[in-house]
Image (cartoon, protein in one colour):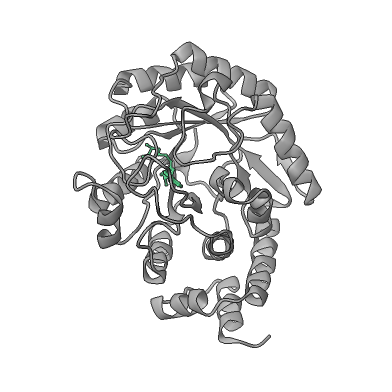
Length: 356
Ligand code: SAH
């Protein structure tokens, strides 16, 4: 194979930065052979940085209430059929205790944007988790808040924050969100979070409605600019009670290709093989790891609420106990030659600000 795509992959793997035109070529002229070549390079980088360890994050979906109305999301405010629930602090702590026994050393608190959970309540929850498990990292994924709120969360001991940018193109952002939500605001939050010393994750959906290769290239350029510690990408999957009910899902093939590119652009990035990837294909998460991902985020939410946190249709593992998920994923990783690590799994070259 001696194609322009292969030459571009070689340049990426050698640490060069590609410009917009080159990234477009990398996407438009891809083919299965080039993808395999990309994955090989991405795995080499991943093995050099992380070996064959796969980091575990325990996802606790602690509220399904949301004040926002994102057109793609199953727990959007306007979905009156969505079942709403909130976990108490005690229930959250129980999830963490159970997770700790299963080898989890990172807990991710994710939810809709729920004003019930005031800054004070979030602070109290973060403090309690850090007190009970001082050797664990706490990640928040609760959307847009003020810089002052983020500062309080960081002071309370939160280590990381996930806030996907969803798309780095303002025109596309406006097609996925109501006017109250803007890309500018989202980017401001991400900047604040970085400045406050969080390990920060952004990310986007692959194959979301109206998305073009130009948009995806803007996403990649945005990653180059922000240099996040984590990047969450997964296929868009329609939810039947949203305006995008009739749209088609993002493709496995394109998601994997983008995972490989992201690994080369940001060699040390913490990159999950997401639940959405496992939803569109039975071995999607394994394929994600083999394309360069190094994180999995099984669910630690109580089984009673699992089936109520539905961002998209057909979500996997909604009936399983945490222990089952942990065992199942462990087996899946072993079968492809990888190992779940019992470790916080921090970003390797953390600046002083990010150490807790
Ligand atoms: N309220 C939090 C958590 C959002 S849910 C926040 O705003 O950050 C986490 C992610 O799930 C979202 O950022 C979005 O990228 C993804 N998501 C939502 N709906 C989806 C869908 N229909 N298909 C695939 N991913 C979806």
